[in-house]
Amino acid sequence: MTITAAADGSSLGNPGPAGWAWYVDEDTWDAGGWPQGTNNLGELTAILRLLEATAETGEELHILADSQYAINVVSKWRLGWKKRGWTKADKKPIKNLELIQEIDRAMEGRRVTFEWVKGHAGHRMNERADDLARACAEAYQAGRTPEPGPGFGGGAGEPHDAASAGQESGGTASASAAVEPHDTVEPGASTPVGQEPTEADTTAAMPTSRGAATDEATTSTFRSHPSVFSAPAEPSEPAQAAPASSVSAATTEDAIAREREFILAWTGGDGEALATMTDDRTTRIWPGGGATTALAGPSPASPAIGRIDAHDLGGAFLTRYRVRWEGGASLESSVWAPATSGEARLIMVHHQSTLIG
Image (cartoon, rainbow, N blue to C red; front, side, top):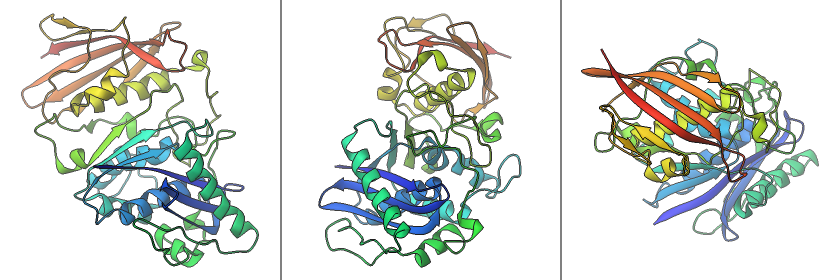
């Protein structure tokens, strides 16, 4: 059995009175907040509380979230930061580090997948989690402590007050350590949008192929909903929000973000995610010249992925990068084009792998 739950955060003013919530159904949810916090703090706390609430179930957990920042922190960046001793590639401080480390500990031994859903777009579970998180923020704005939900398995817990939240975020709820004052938020949404941090521009070890996966790669699979949003920024790098539904607004950053989704799905053996990136134009050229219309196939064990370069071809995007593994290397190139169905997403219409010395 897989537990599917939505997790969301809210901040009135960002920073300002803030809340978090996770939601399975009307009998299974929880929420809390603080007098002062950010969207990102709420999003991450919702994920942590959900992990804690379901820790004893032994079930796989599938988390729906509208924050690409939160998904990337937990599914991608966390792993690189941990390998470097909880430091970023650019040596800048990691926001909400203690909270992220708590999430890291809560992820140990768990099978957790993530799915991005568009916020404020009528998704029932996401909308309910958003309502609950906002209600907590509004309660703190009015000087009240919100009541907790029934939790997982029924029985309401203790109120989630500001004091406990301060410990989670590495300081008191009103301290600057718990607040990211430079979040840039897309109008009508709860996730910051902008350029990918330098984390993604460095060579990084990707998840190993199916059957040889490390514990980290196995327990943290990123299954992204197709989108053409710019790759999410870290809070310290605000950028102008991208239009939410315009294919013409796609940029090279969008193509790079889609390429990373492809790499994670390919090396993780996620055929379902790969299928969402294709249409009837898709062709993949394998080493040796073989061609398929599907993207799924064998991948090298423990590959290291080089910097992804992207070029605007005028209506489409070319991405290129090198993949290295023990005993070999390849040059990978893709062409991404807008979906012909009218959906706001990029489709991989061509991918080629060429062995290099």
